[in-house]
Image (cartoon, rainbow, N blue to C red; front, side, top):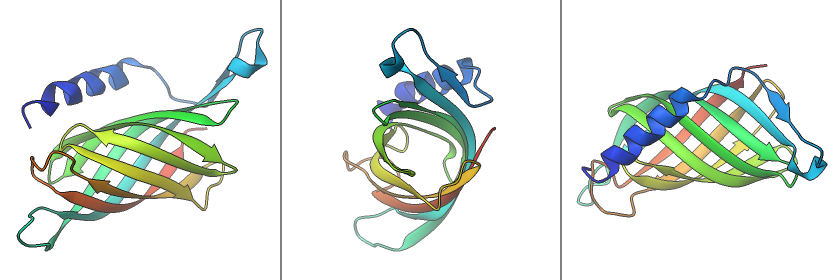
Length: 156
């Protein structure tokens, strides 16, 4: 936990320092470098498994604000920060690929430390549903893994 707290603080300040409240397209003279930037609000709920001895699920929820960058090759970079229960604060940073309207992202949550796979479905321009499964690679912190479902609203 002590090792991942500075990483989380860095991600939090980095995300808050970027002003991104609307979808924007950046490009220069080379069209292959065009990047779409979309800001969003996301609400998630799910269960965490907090003990190796007993796989009794513990409920949780989060509200996050974030930004997704997608280039012409449909490669994705995304970050999010927000509030969560029971951890109070949370954040995520990830990379992935877009397949038609579905995003598949591999993320890192600094605290509680988890690596996870997230996908979107029922995607429209304004919103999408997301689902993720997380696992703790360190065997430390307060969770061994999470299963989440959420709804994401894009700022247009």
